[in-house]
Length: 211
Image 1 (spheres, helix red, strand yellow):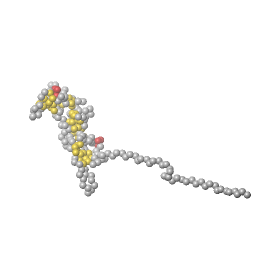
Image 2: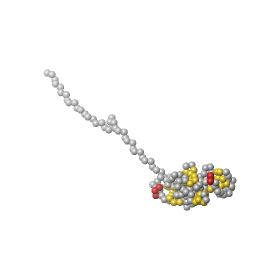
Image 3: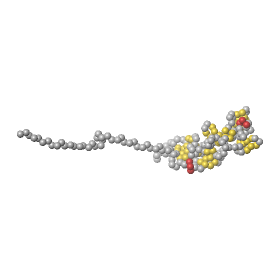
Image 4: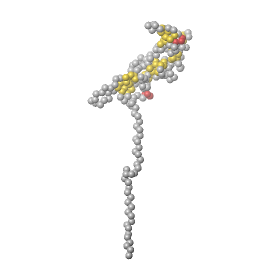
């Protein structure tokens, strides 16, 4: 009699893969880039809060109501001569001796401190910068300088000096002012007009200019 053998049903085992064991995972996302921080502190005066008034010593230049700008590790000051100097602070930890850098001039001044041209002031240009007749650097007026010196600056033995819109004689050690020939008169620009005309001799604020 044949022997009939019975086999048990196959056992199916389903194994779940643990994370990281053969299972592909998305690469971690990089954190968003951090925004660059400004060297200026929140205490720095906003341009909209500043008021501007003529300098007592240089009325052709307007100076801000706040003459100090605080940075992260230094302070920039606008002094009485209307130049800017940066002073570095001692930010060392307590008990640590530091040697901060020496003060240094800042040229040009930052916008918050840079003197501006007073309305109607005579401002000349030199190397893409603007100056009052006292050679104080100022922000150039809209449209550029308000007075253009003659070119050339010398005719015969007479030369023109931009600092006071006057002429001198070459070789005169006294630097006495002399009447400028017409060829050495500066020219007003934009909306400025001579405020005096004496027989065809025009002037503006006491300085001879072309009519």
